[in-house]
Structures are given as structure tokens and as C-alpha cells.
Image 1 (tube, one colour):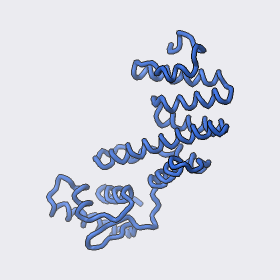
Image 2: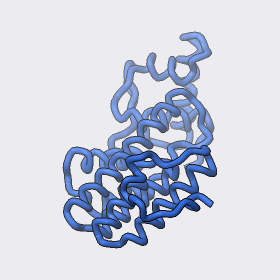
Image 3: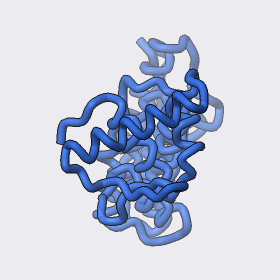
Image 4: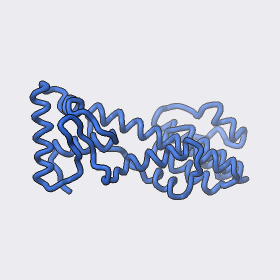
Length: 216
């Protein structure tokens, strides 16, 4: 449903919070540069516009406002999948696929509350993918481990811990050549973008198996 910018921000804010919020808090956060009276007026206008569009996604009282319970939020679904893995639950294919396909939260939005939520969700997803990879390697499910590790690499190509887990999974599966290939890929990326070398911990995984021309 196409929404005006002011209502987009309201819906997104409520979707990410996931609980009823006081009207004053919502108005003060979304229209931070306006006076309290102006901010409250902007909130009332945004709610009116949603009603004019026939959207029933907002539940509002005289004091609180929330996203309707029957609205599905993809970011919250990703957070649920990540929590299930991080809290020790089995990382099934559904959870892994959901996390691997999680895109950047609200790209091109630069409100402070968006930046905070974007980084929080990004870190949670990366940590969950890495946990899934490590757990799968420990259980001997190497294909699953490599898939989860590469999903983390795809989301953050310069993240050493993600590359390290892929290398460890290949080594545990007996694929030394694949482990070296992954190591060299990371070393090239690190040198090209940051002018750095892999950490001693990363290099120790492949020992003396790589040559001096590593990043050429």
C-alpha cells in the first residue's frame, strides 16, 4: 500500500518497536525538531491520513499507539529467527534461509532511531549466522556450516570471524584447498579495502600452506 512519507515513518517506527507506545513519545521522536504542540499535530495528521487510505494497521487510544497485532513485520521475524539460534535452538533451514535473505533495514533512511535499529538487527543476524555455522561444524554438518558462514560473509565481506568459520568448516571436512581459497579471498579483500593483513589467529588456521604471493 503506497503511503505518504509522514505515515511511512510512523508505521516503520511502530513496527520496529513492537509494543504500545505513548503518543507523546512517538510524536517527540518522529518530529524531534518541532514543538510538543506541533509534533502532536503532526502525529494526528499522520493518523488521519492512514484512516483516509483505509489502512487499519494502527491501533490507537487517547494515550497510546501501536501497530495492529495482525500485521506481520519482516524485521521482527528476522529477529525471532536470530534469537532462536542465539539462545541455543536448532538452526533449521527455515531460520537460516530467513536470516541469509535479510536485507539492510530501511536503506536510505537516516533518522537516528533507524540507524540504531539497523545496526542492532545487522549485528544480531551476523551473530546468529556465525553461531549456526559454528554449531553445525561441531555437529559434523559441514554443508550447513559453510552455507551459514558464507551467508554471514555475503552480508559483511570484511568480517574476519565469518570468513574464519568458513575456513574452519572446510578444514573440519578435510577440504584444505577450499580452506586456503577462502583464506586468500579474505586476505585480498582486506588488503584491497583496508590495507591490512589477516590476524594471526586467522593465519594460524592455514599455517604454512599459503605462499608469500597471498594478496597479489
